[in-house]
Length: 224
Image (cartoon, rainbow, N blue to C red; front, side, top):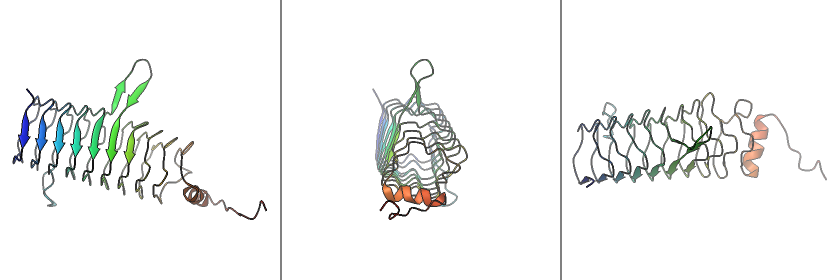
C-alpha cells in the first residue's frame, strides 16, 4: 500500500533511495528534504512547502529521482533541485518554482527506433530564474507560466506550447523553438538571428516585433 503523509513536518528528512511510488504528500513541509535517487513514480504532492524563504536555506533535492507521472499541485518548490531526474509526464500545476533547477532532466519516453516522445505539463507556475538547460521538451505543454530570465541552454522546445507565458529574458545557447506556440506570450530577448524560430506560431504584434529586431520596417500603405 502506498504511503500517505498529511500535515507532516518532514524538513531535512532523508528519503534518498526510498521506494515511495504512488505516495501522497499533502500540506507537508519539505525544506531541505532529500529525495535523491528515490522512486517517486506516480506520487502526488499537494500544497507542500519546500522553501524557507531564507537566502541560506537548504533546498529540497529531487536529483536523479524517478519522477515519472508525478503531480505537484499548488506547491512552493522555489530553488528545488530536480537535476538529472527521470521525469516523463511530470505535472506541475500552480506551483512556485523560482530558481528551480531542472537541468539535465529526462522528460523522454523512447518509443522505438529514432522516435522519442517527451511529456511535461507546467501550467500557471512562477518559474522565473529557473534552469531548463540540456532538456528535450518537444511538443510539451508549458502554458500560462512566468518564465522570466529562465536559462535554457541546449533546450529543445520544438512544437512546445508556451502560449500565455511571460518569456522575458528566456535565453540559452542552443535553444530551439521551431514550431513552438508563442501566441499570447510576452518576450523581449528572442533574437531571430540566433534562434531557430521556423514555424513558430505567434500573433501579429509579436511577429512585427520580431521583424523589427531584424531591422525590417513594415509600411502598411505600401500595398495601397
